[in-house]
Structures are given as structure tokens and as C-alpha cells.
Image 1 (tube, rainbow, N blue to C red):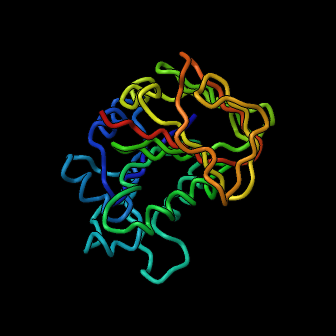
Image 2: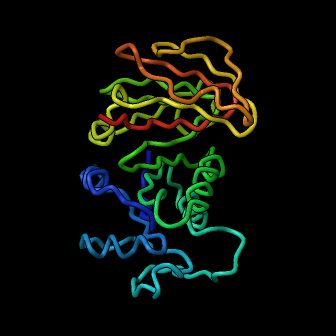
Length: 235
């Protein structure tokens, strides 16, 4: 499983960044437009800098810099997704994908979870939430493990395990578990406050919001495509 890091221009969690940089092997790093400034502050040189660099205000002088016009059909994060697919990455951990000054950019990034599938799985990581997408898959979740698997051959690997040090900074038992879809999905839930089989989720009614883990392990089985949000609870 080949992984990379996207560093964008939104709100960046330094504890997630530090956890990701401890992975072995070290992930390939994309600087997406204004995310380049954060990396330079941390003394990290990106493997690729990509974007139109309108929010950064200058073009980085890096050996691998890919500059695009401001007037284009795809936002900068989508350009990074395309490039990561070309480089045959399976997983991208996204920092700075939420927050900042632009709510529309946050919503755009959430939509791109589905754009990236099935070749690339995105995980958006920040201090408020861990967000990713499932497509005809099963999620098994505990404080010590996150496993995503599919018996339908939809992805290059049959299963994915979230690295322990990354999952540890966002304990699932201390988060709300919310599920959303843009169209229609059917889910089965076990080990949660709201369990059930053949639960129909639609894009017009937020039935899946604010669930919680109630057992040591919970399972989410999905037919269709859903967005999973693990949003930390306030003390």
C-alpha cells in the first residue's frame, strides 16, 4: 500500500503532521498551493509542489513544481489527486483540506472523496474530524484498529489498516460517528448507539448524523457510497 501526504492551505493539525512523518517508509509529500508555506515553516521539502499558487502568492523554487493557470476546471486538490493516481499511490492523507477562509473549498474537498475512488483513498485529518469515503465496503472500528475491507474486488487491496499512530490521535470511542451520502446508500450498523440492517441513507435527509460507538468494536457495512465523519466530542 503506497501512501502520500497532501498539505493544503486550510487549517493544519501539527499533531497529525508529526504522526504522519513518523511512518515508515516516509510518505511522499505533496505541497498544494498555500500548503507549501506550512512545509517550509516545518523545514520539510515537498516531493512535488502543485497548484496555481494564487493563495501562496509566489511559485515555489522546488525541483518538482507543477504550475497551473488560475482559470481552470479543476481545483488544486483535484490536480494533486490526478497526479497521485498517475504515480500509483493508493492512499493520501490530507492536511489543510478543511477550514481556512473558504467554506466552498471545504465542501469541494469533501466531494472529491468520491472523485478519488476507487484508485485513491483520501483521509482528511484535522483537529475536529477524520473524514473519508467508503464504496461497497465494510468498516471495522475500535480504538486500536481501523480496518476497511471489500469482498467485491473494488480496490487494489482487499483491506486497509489505518496506521496505529495516526488512529491514536483521534480515538473513535471519543468521537461522533456520522454517515452521509450524496445519492442513495444502504448500511448495516453493529456496536453503535443506533444499530440496524438495511438502513437507507439519502442525500436529502441526514439520518446518519451523530451516531456513537457503544461497544469495543463497531462495524459499518455499506452498499453504495458514503462519507464517514469521526467528529471529536467537546468536553
